Image (cartoon, rainbow, N blue to C red; front, side, top):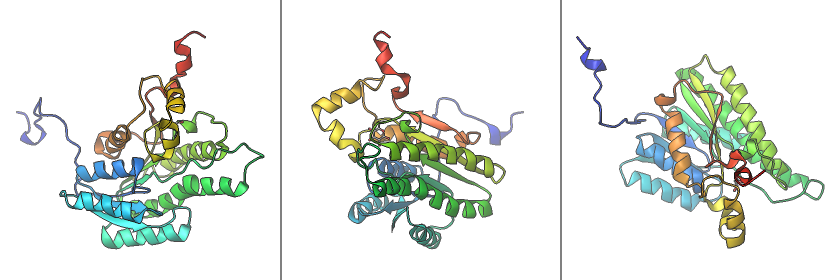
Length: 273
Ligand code: BGC
């Protein structure tokens, strides 16, 4: 006879439930991070909303979650500063409890500058936020997750972990570096119950690329670079992240899930070649 406990019902849908989990999403006062934080809160996780300069926006995100039955608290600091990161993690320990999920989302494109005509300080800043930030946060997370015997770290990379992008050597180098960080860290912690996965968004409509989608000419040009006939929406990324941090993805580690509507499919080849 079938065990009652293992009985499945068909046609009722499948559920992702993160109740009892604590998640930190860096850079969650706007854009992708905000949507990811809201999705994780919808699935039941307690969410640490992190901001660098947009305190009021972060508080609004937390207020929206808290007033709709979820749980969120706000934490400020610069992810490229090791001491700020240590303080953020300590406050999360105190306010929300042990961390189960880290989403390294905070990032900047930086200015478009050709190598040699650029300012090395800008390069260092992009690497600081996009690569050192995830490293500092991951090392704090791993220390805690090892004690708990489980955890998931998601690194938001970009199609530019694969695709070169003139004028953005720092950005592309940081994202490619972050991809290799994902793989190496995943290998290191594979026996501690910790998974590490990259999510590589394509062109998603957020404030980061507003100057491109906000102008009809550059918007038209951008669409020629995507196989599907649209830009991505923040929910496209948030849903992928929600799946990856759940137990449904429990055998996925050390790899990149590309969510780009086919930007990496060389769409120019649709017409000749
Ligand atoms: C960048 C966006 C850009 C997209 C596609 C992302 O990683 O942050 O500004 O639109 O890549 O090129």
